[in-house]
Amino acid sequence: MRALVPLLAAVTLASALQDCSCGYMVNTTDQEYYAVFTEIFETDFLHVGNLKKDTGNSWLPQSYDHSPEASHGPCGKLAGVENVKTNPIHNAWDWTGPGIHGQDPGLQLWTEHGFTDVSSYCMIPIAEVVSTRDDILYGSFRIGLKTSAVNGTCGGFYFYLNKPAEIEMELLSKSNQKSAGFVQLVVPSEEDMQRGHMKHDSPDVDAHSLIFSPTTDYNEFRFDWLPDRIDFYANGERLSTVTDNVPNSPGSLRISHWSNGDDDWSGGPPKEDAVMTVSYVKAYFNSSEPDNTQASLMNCRDSLGGEHACRIPDQMKPPGLLAPDGNQTAQTHFFQRNMSGLVTPAPIPPKHSRGSERRYGSGIGGVLYWAMAIAAGLFTFHGFNAFRLLHVGLRIRAP
Image 1: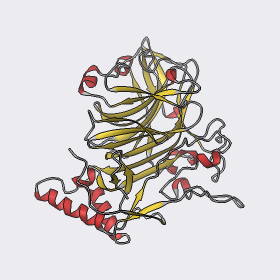
Image 2: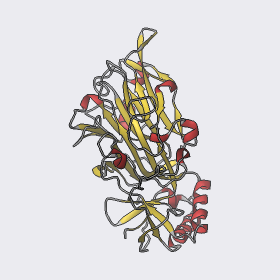
Image 3: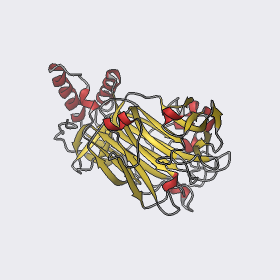
Image 4: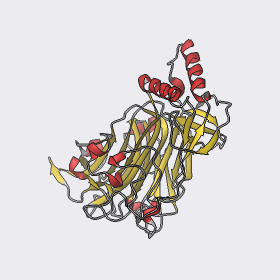
């Protein structure tokens, strides 16, 4: 199914205050159209002290135990809330430096080296968080992270409903070196679901080489999910496009750091406690809930005449914290305000100048709203969900 019939409307970009009432635009790889998404949540983990309070309850730490059989390895997985830890930077205006508990700042997901024997089998303590939004249907999803250099873990960022409705970017610590690494790009098939788990030689696994090591500093990993394809990126560079097995049902985002001792995938168990640290997650997407979509349409119509959608900036360099200029490179763009009790970007202390990064919006002059509304009405006439149009990712011509 095509993503959408494009709107024949020119888009004029202008430097402006952030009014994104008509959504968020991402440039697709055909370079002619922008996909537009109406929903947003962004989490700046560098300045989050209380995961529930400071993120508006956007993320839920997981607690479960999966047996070795269920985990498809010699060991089971024991997810614990205590293995998910916040470690914010000391000052709200800083974007680099150690966290308040030492070590790298951000959301820490720990996989422990020790394991617990339960009925004669081993359980490895791991960490996972899940977004409270489970109505995510297409979008652009980005994560800044530094993964573990300890051999024997898997760090993952993924969309999930169930297998095979899954999109994964996974980092196996056993594959990463000091100067380079690999990321596993996974979109499972029905055959993978029948087998129950992924193997490194599956045709649905792309072990893509990286020109950097994800263990030495923070980097951005991203996937753009459209109805007809999935585009994978690292630090703004497109790695791969997948057109098979593309999910078409809503679900949630997940971040995990785990091991099950399986030599074919995670390896391990790790010989020491291992941590993956997340600096941010940015999600721009459409909702499968008609009420949410209708609210987005009304917001677009009512706010300044329905004229503004915002282009999502591409993160074309590593959002690193550890280099000498880390206070600049780690200060990435956020659309949302008052996140974690802060103004985003974070407040600047006295005598310091604000960064020069520009913000962009686009005027669409009401065409966006009315085109959506008319098309939604046409879909209704033919017996379809009136708001299916937004679910598949509206497209407009690039400026």
